Length: 350
Ligand SMILES: Cc1cc2nc3c(=O)[nH]c(=O)nc-3n(C[C@H](O)[C@H](O)[C@H](O)COP(=O)(O)OP(=O)(O)OC[C@H]3O[C@@H](n4cnc5c(N)ncnc54)[C@H](O)[C@@H]3O)c2cc1C
Image (tube, rainbow, N blue to C red; front, side, top):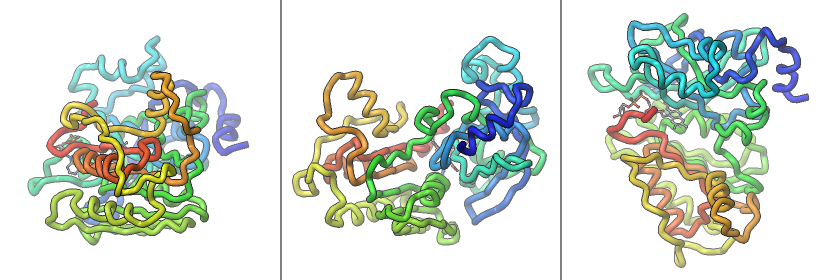
């Protein structure tokens, strides 16, 4: 029996509503990890039901941030008392003041099996000199034990959450690849760290993390042979160091697709994405779906590539890396997950 099935078996119907993906949680601890990262630990009995089977990897959650001075909306309670099947429609239907703001974060670590279930989320503190930023970073800057938010995430009792693939909130999917590239800015540090911690010993490759400052470097444990490179941005433009390091790493022989295409032959131009209007999000799973829907056979079974890349961060930087890998190097798009985690100058669309 897996962790999650044991937990499900222990629970009685009164303990949890199986299909409710909303968790009302309380801040139990706040820890400044580095100058720009703040770890917030969320607890609550309801978290006993939180999670998917297996490692959390890059598991994403939504956090509903209450409007300043107002209580967090009780989405879980509303769902129990409503015929609505979608928490999102319920939330959107609320008065704007009452519903607050919704932002996406990664579960850095989940400890939901013990008597006091908890999850950690690492917030990047992107505040200006006056302490102003988006609702999530402002909330995190002021967070104290006892504060409440609502988290939207997988409920282990729900059929759609039994595996990471079924839930759909985990993108890391290297298939049979044993050589990987993980690249991201500070917002991807929690996901890359959790992925590295879960990798097996026979996985090799590079993890490249660009952070604002040298003091933002954090210890990461991994059994894998993946080499970890931290890049301190300082006053340089966002992504400049990351892009150079990826270009360097991808030139190493053997870092291209099974098709044998290298930098000399290149690949095709990926479709342009207007990152100010659309979300830059292209993952092998989405491509598989598009291929099945279009009826075009890619001629290669999924998950058989030896190389896999996972790239996340500011959308313009990710778009540049996508173009380099797919068009210039010729890496098969089905071997790469590209995710624009945020867009400079734009609040997250919720
Ligand atoms: C799947 C996924 C997982 C994520 N995981 C994490 C995580 O674990 N930790 C984390 O900190 N972030 C994470 N992010 C990024 C986070 O959702 C965004 O940074 C979000 O915009 C922060 O919300 P906000 O309310 O603070 O700012 P918003 O209201 O969304 O934006 C306000 C302003 O701040 C700017 N801004 C937003 N983020 C940053 C930033 N990081 N640096 C500089 N300026 C910024 C925007 O461009 C905008 O101008 C993740 C995003 C996704 C999609």
